[in-house]
Length: 173
Image 1 (cartoon, rainbow, N blue to C red):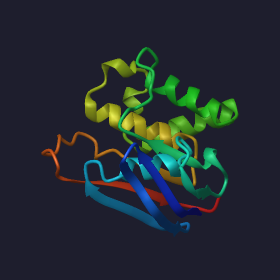
Image 2: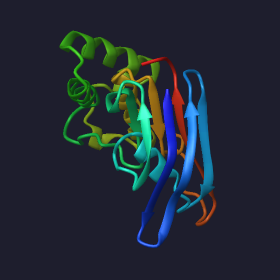
Image 3: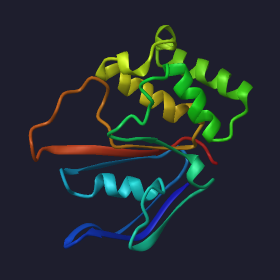
């Protein structure tokens, strides 16, 4: 369960969130559309616990570790292989070594990246880097996932065009 109540956040005089409230139950997905600067990424950062709202509250069953985050940046280490990155991030989320290895193999297979597991991240194309970032988010077995990213391999949008962010809950934490 993801819950937002009266979220408010501003950057100087620019209000990004103004009284945002909603709940997202397991099995539900929330898509957030709006032009650049509308507050989509700010909302997801508040939900993921990356920034604190100036007013209101956000709660995720299971706490911050229950969120898989796929942002504009991959947050993968270029000198590590794809597999090493997944094992590293799994360790930060407290998964045992055996569970990390099994989960990394499972997610890599699911995203059709098993043949790229031993490649350093710096060598990946933009589309493969995006898939590796998705693998990182899924490797930690999050019941909720938030993304500010476009689909793998997509091109830039014209300035001011509408964009979409999403949050999804798959199971109860």
